[in-house]
Length: 68
Image (cartoon, rainbow, N blue to C red; front, side):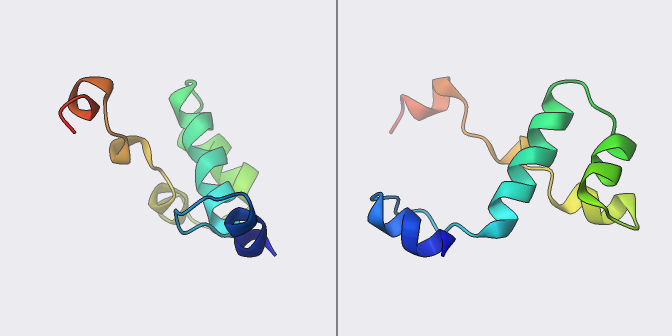
């Protein structure tokens, strides 16, 4: 359902339910939340699993974006 709606909206990036989980965890951590809080929010047994969803290092900064 999510992929269908994304395609209908013209979103070309591959997206799925885990995209929302990764976004929630990343936003929590970016705003000063602790990994343990994000872990509970995601209902993960291990903080290591939660860390796999942390996308803070995946961002392209505005300065580098202008190079494209």
